[in-house]
Length: 294
Ligand code: NAP
Image 1 (cartoon, rainbow, N blue to C red):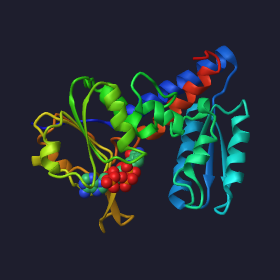
Image 2: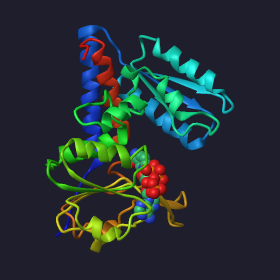
Image 3: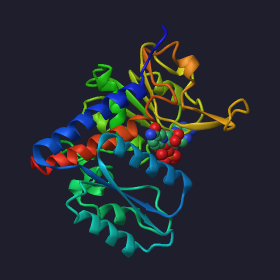
Image 4: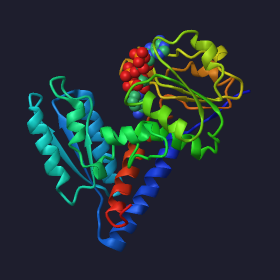
């Protein structure tokens, strides 16, 4: 079997086009332009790049974006006070605090300062708590994990009742994607660095989500024939033939696994483009809710 490739770039573009159309409608019908604030503390180059990408994509869909930058030695009180000012601004419907924060700051405290209705990144402790509870739903779910579910939905994969295995339990990816799969009634197994006999656990999966950050860890003979494989991993591998000196590969040995799986995401071009698309979607949802209160 050769797997069908899940084209995350095309699916993310479709979502972005839907958001752009939604933004036009919201302004036409209610005079509301969705607004997103990004909060960047310090000068981590990767975080600066991510924030710039988010702002650029906001511009592409007509979302108004405001970039707030604070120095790397900003105090807890200063950061929380700035977030509260953004909470109070009615032109802003979403607030995203770029993680990780400098180590002297208490991440949970800063995220808790975000108005729940504006928590478009879904990392407010109350939203994460609701995500983990049966019968309760978060106002927003984190972008990369939601992107994984959206990919499954858009290629028509039924999640309910399936064996899902998630490799990784980070707060950013593994844990929330696991909770989302559980909410959709998957039978769930979560693996981490202390899990034993990974290959045998992974072989049970109808749906496999790999989010460990280990280059091509999942081999072809770990995967059940016909499984759907979603590779969240982004790893840099030296490659002198490339201009920048490296290439990006996933946590899954793509060439081997594509011969066994029914569907597979490539890296790059799979889950990666979904993150910002889902953030834009959440920001539009937040703005719409100011009209139609949930
Ligand atoms: P992380 O915080 O480092 O978490 C990695 C997880 O994998 C941990 O739960 C860890 O277990 C587990 N793990 C590590 N080595 C393992 C091993 N040998 N066997 C089994 N489990 C192992 O990473 P993350 O933030 O979740 O990111 C994971 C990957 O996704 C990275 O490559 C990252 O670049 C990528 N990523 C992509 C996107 C995107 O596409 N937009 C967004 C975020 C992250 P313990 O909990 O026991 O330590």
